[in-house]
Length: 179
Image (cartoon, rainbow, N blue to C red; front, side):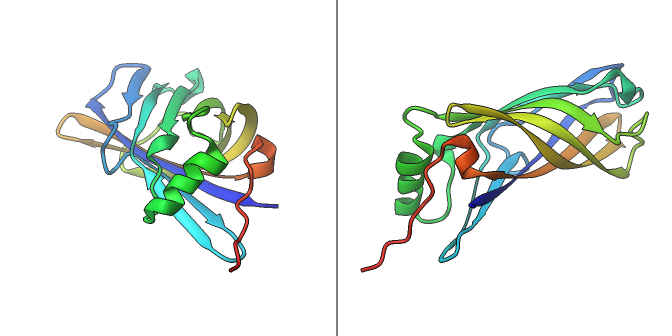
């Protein structure tokens, strides 16, 4: 079974928030990025894109009010460092002409404290509805959250990590070619 490791990392800056603030992605930022790793038998592939949009809503002083969020990733912009491999990945596997985007919608968050204290790191879990290649499935995620407040500005950095099976999403697996 082919497993693909994916992680999202983004930082959102806002004025120190009133209850239930919206935190957005800074699309194109080097901090707001999607990375992936594919540990194939004959070739280890990793890549990334910083072409993502979306955000989440949370009250950092009263997290039991819930967390909502939706993110969109432009799969046409994924880069692995080899142009031909990128083209093959987009055309043959992700089929980005038909399925140009992947989506993540926060379903649940587990283990979040009642308040996100400034300059603290939290390791939590949760589930997202992940939509790619025309297929939507619920998948578990591991998340690290750090909130910081400096000069009346607030930042929340979130790193979410998950694995998925390409077969579960109808994505054709790469095959090695031998000459």
